[in-house]
Amino acid sequence: MDFGFVFTIAAATIGIVLLSKLVRIVPQNEAYIVERLGKYATTLEAGFHVLVPFVDRVAYKHSLKEFAIDVPSQQAITKDNVSLGIDGVLYLKVMDPKSASYGVENLSFAITQLAQTSMRAEIGKLTLDQTFESRDNINGEITRAIDEASNAWGTKVLRYEVKDISPPKSILDEMEKQMSAERERRVAVTTSEGYKTAQINEAEGDKQAKILRAEGDARSVEIEAISRAKSIKIIANAIRDGGETAVAQQLSEQYIAAFEKLAKEGTVALIPADSTDISGTVAKAFTAFDTLKTKVGTQGA
Image 1: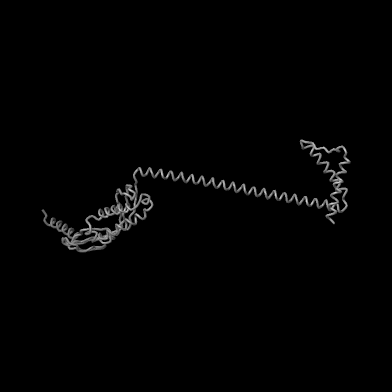
Image 2 (image 1 turned 90 degrees about the vertical axis):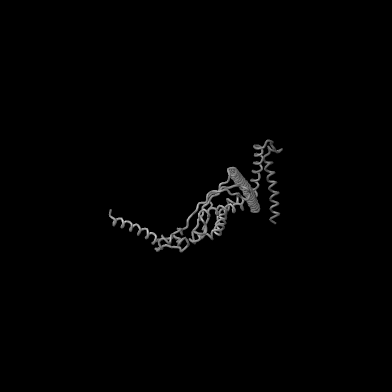
């Protein structure tokens, strides 16, 4: 047996063990807690470090990155006595590796329990409706409560997020009925508002139509009056200018035409006593004309 080869192997093994105990390389964003003879000695940050073999040992390793802890679902009772199932996620970071190593036995377990306790306390201050409406406030309050309690453990709680809120099935059914009733109410309100608007628009349209018709009728009467006044003025001017015969003839024709119209359209015939005497009819027209002429002459004077 070659004792030289065995000795070489043994020496190499002892060298490797000594080297592993002597040299430590700490990765970036990590910290190692070193104990010397069972007592805290130093905190190794990122880089190359030399330890005393068999005297110094790395007792704890911590990541200095932000990490997340899942908070399991738990039951919490609201202010109005409704039991809710709530779970969340907690984001934190180790700020003091020494306190995180010696301040608590199990950091993740302790933080999780603290998060659940704080969550139950905050939910107990709110009603069911406030629980759904105030998630941001709940997250903020739980974050502050955990952060204050975890300072002694060398950790910084960055934020807490409620992942899910699960009410009992009976509450979900009631909420669904309430939502359905609210939707029906909105439909009814929208329908009534539409009907109201339609009625208002219709009434406004009728009002505008009546106004326009009244304005049209008034304008028509005004135009007719102006036209009649102009025709009367023309007749008066014709009388003053010597057109008596033409005017008298026109009156006679209108007189005869009026009786003819009554005979055609009316159900009762109006016949003058001297209807066979055309000359008498014409004479009456001229008599009316003489009276009109006298009136015009008097007004002209």
